[in-house]
Length: 308
Image (tube, rainbow, N blue to C red; front, side, top):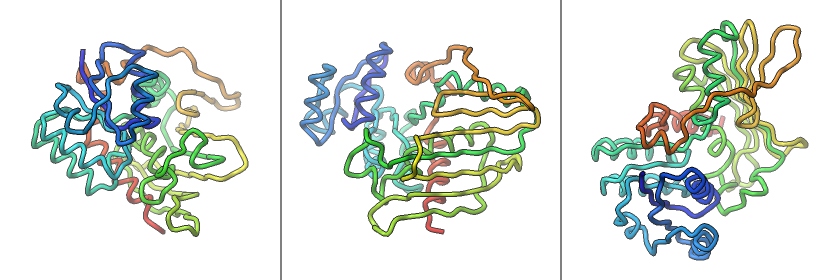
């Protein structure tokens, strides 16, 4: 059993509460957010204890602190938790920028705490199966990797909040790309982004609407990344690995497909069970994504967000 405190009572905070309550063996000691109405809602619906201040949650005898707040606040919260000797689980992206992320890594090392990023792809059976097939040579030599993301609207209908559409903290490059860039990095090693073109609207406060980037992996495999919002189609996320003998596509987070020469695309549905996030935290599993790895991803994000 591990105990956890939660900072942030928004959509992602609520999702973590649901996940914990479904899984068990994790005790929520307290939830804090500056929005008191939202806190009371979570208490009424899920029965979670609520705290009156950030300080009170740090003194609630917790093993871990979960950070589910906007990116600009991550560094300060993480550093205070580290100073109190509390392990930290953070939402992605790691921080507002790589400079803040580096401070988080250094604070964790200085205070000898454990860290983890909330990257759900690491705990999806389809992703584990995909990685196993790639590494075993099932699709032959990998010759290209592509990430394609399309959003009819950004923010999505369920994502409405004051910052998710802002240029300073929001956008799909910050909110969606980290999941796949971490997977890129974990499977294929360091990425070198050779060029990119990012499109922003005229309103200076609003986030990106499109991006195209290309580069190579540590093994000199070319990759292509595209993202587009405000278009006339359903949301579609595809992480596609092209091999000489076959092609694997991870679609919309958890649907895995395989293609072979001259054959129709086939779904793969028979997966082995994999550890959950909280099981990995209890067991200190190598599936966990530490802050150091989150910082690598943060640097990719910072580069992609630079105006071309």
